Image (cartoon, rainbow, N blue to C red; front, side, top):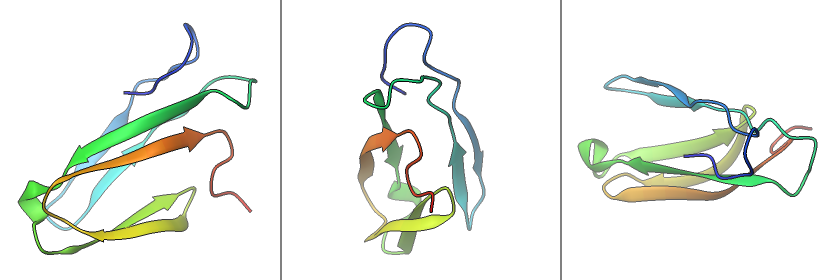
Length: 80
């Protein structure tokens, strides 16, 4: 779920493959302080390494197995 004010959200799209889970979303707001959060259950890939990328830039790595939360999605995150 993307948190924000009314009219600033866009639906989450995703692809769940056995080797790759990919999520795409956008925060539609000109207000840079509007943020969102993404929560993913990774129990089906327990013990496997997971990479988190924002705009193609490596943002985090962790070992799958629980619920992972990326707490601060924001406009322009990860862009150079």
